[in-house]
Image (cartoon, rainbow, N blue to C red; front, side, top):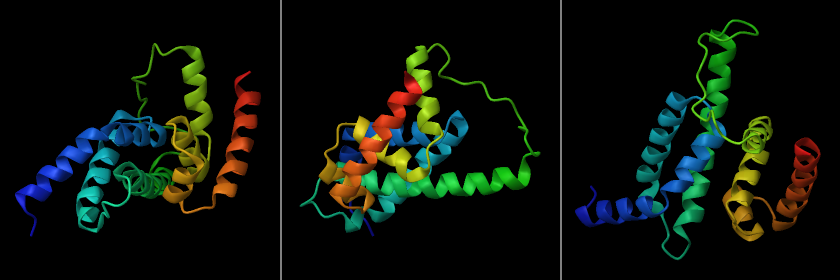
Length: 163
């Protein structure tokens, strides 16, 4: 049973870090309906896990870890559904991209990120959000050295792709 104080604390922490959910959802889902579904799943999992949050650590790091794990699972599940439901090589519906009107550089960046595997997508998202290598390593459960190596490779690939 949760207390009103726990609910208020949770709501305040989530409100203070809600951009994390937006960034993760946008990075893993281009369809607005899928983004809404993913956001709902992330918030549900955050609430379910809130009792295990250790206040000695940064809430944003904990939130990123849960949000990315939910997003990766959602992404994998949607890929399986897409393979079994959508006609080969086609789409069931043409989705209107709500990012129309973004500068071309931003669109190219989104396309680059969209093509990455889930781990590298998470790395780019965390890096672009200004997290340190240590924070990224904590969220993703890999070493700082591995983070640095992967980010350098991603920077090089991004530079080649975007220039």
